[in-house]
Length: 343
Ligand code: MG
Image (cartoon, rainbow, N blue to C red):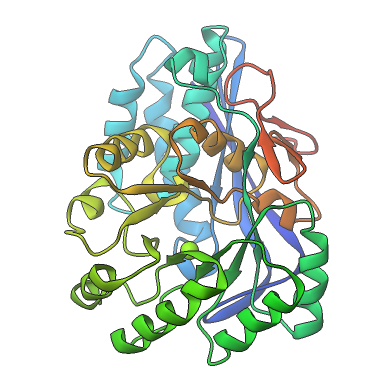
């Protein structure tokens, strides 16, 4: 198998603000895996605040290149991923890119779509939330208008003005809200007071209100919360999930955190067994990574896969958005193809 990679900068339509930072672009690296006249694609998305650098990710791809040379599509994906995982404790986005490309390549070799190949439900027409970042009042109003086709909004909170933000949104729409605090609140009593206030504002889930280190306080909040609490920064991989111990009522699974589709399926299985709600999310990825995650929509309680819509230079084609709902296409593999990337 031959690995090629291509660093790229995804440019936001509007500056994107979350608790702690605002940015105009997201670095990402697209990869191509070739074997026996077949090609698979993947993506390692690297928002700066996650701490996975372009240099470390490229270095991981160099290591992976020699490892993948020994393999063909007759190898087992599980064995390849196990070998890659042993190379480095981190580099989760790089591992996810290779996992996505392997699943794309192997499904294509079998002349099947990913869902048919894995024998999982291909769910269509799933409503996704549309994300509104922290911004000035007039920009938020503009974004609410742009999101008119979406039935659910996700807002980024975690500032001193969160009530003002929600009140502003409620002046313009009564759509259900997902509120993502990105670890921005640090007092458990404050979190419960906010939950009691938000429950009358049609807020249906609260994502990562407190820092990931505050697991005990978070369990205290979840026990008393009338709104679903969803872990994001607190859970990257399956082992984090196994250590949650009731701190949240569900989790946000993202391919870039969990190292890809193989581990995401294990986490989904764990959630089903332990009655944890499943939110399928993504980093601010292109259509390449997002389309890979959309293959798993049949398992989701909630879907937050709007990232490609936030960009003005998405170089891949994949899922289609119609009236705020996500549709997979009929291509083989993951169903994503480069429009303007030359490897
Ligand atoms: Mg989040």
